Image (cartoon, rainbow, N blue to C red; front, top):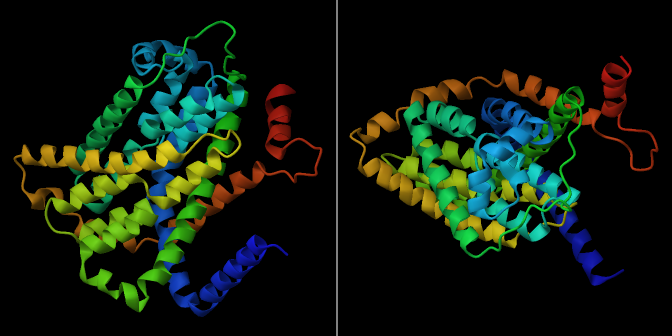
Length: 371
C-alpha cells in the first residue's frame, strides 16, 4: 500500500464519518440544492443548452460560421467556432465548454486554443441571469439585464485581451471540419447530451450545497450568519446559485454587484463541472481558473458604473424579498424535474464492457434511420 493510497482511503473514511455525524445538516443542504436545481437551474439552463448544442452540431452551424466570421477573425480563432460564440451567449455555463470539447476531440481546434476560449466562453446564460436572478431573486427583470450586459462586456474585454497575445489560426483545407449529422439525428443527440450535462451539473450543485450546509453549521463559521455579504461570498465561492440567492439579504446596490461577480466567477462547482466535461480532450484549465477572478472583478466594476448612471434607487433594483419567499415555498417541481433529467441521462449510459451501442443510439436508429 502506497502513501497516496493510504491518504486517499483515510480522506474518504473521514468524509463518510462527517456525513454520518452531520447527516441533519447534510440533508438540509441537499434539500436546498434540489430546490435550486428545480427552481432556477433546470428551467434556465436545459432548454437553451439543448438548442445551443443543436446549433453547433447541425448544419445550422454553417450559417453562424458566416455570421460570426468578423468576430472569429478578430479573436484569431477558426471560423468553425462561430457556433461556440453563440452558445456562450445563450447556452449557460457547460454548453460552450461541451462544444469546445467536441471540436477539440475532432481536431478542429488545438487544446491551447480551446483553453483560451474557455476563459471568455463559459458564462451564465441570459435565462439564468434575467429570470432566475433578476426576476426570481431581486423581483426586477431590469436587474437581470444589467447583470447580463455587464457579464457580456466583461467576457468581451477578456476575449480581446487574450487575442492580443494569440497567433492567428488559418482555416486551411487540411484542417478537420466538424461532423454534421442528419437533422433528426442531431435533435436526439442534442437533447440527450444536454440532459446528461444538466443532470451532472445538478449533481454537483446538490453535493456542493450539502457540504456548505455542514460547514455553515460549524462553530468556526458561525460569524458568517452575522454578515450577509460574507455569507453570500462563502456560498458563491462553492456554488453560484446559492451564492446569488444569498445576495438577496444584502441591502442596496451591493447585492446586485456581488450577485454579478458571483455569477461571473461561477464557483468551484461549475469549475469542477468544466473539468469533468473537458477531461477527455485534455484541455488545460489553469488559464480558465485564473480568468474566473478577473471575470468577477471586471463584471463587478462594470455593474458599479451601470448603477452610478442609473436614475433608479436601490429599492427599485432589490425588491424581490416577497418573490423569493414565495418561490421557496414551491418544492414540488424538484422531484419531477430531476426525475426527467435522470431518465434522459440514463438513456445515454452504457456499461464500459458492453459491445452494444448506447440505448439512445439504438432508439434513434429505429425511429429515424429505419423508418
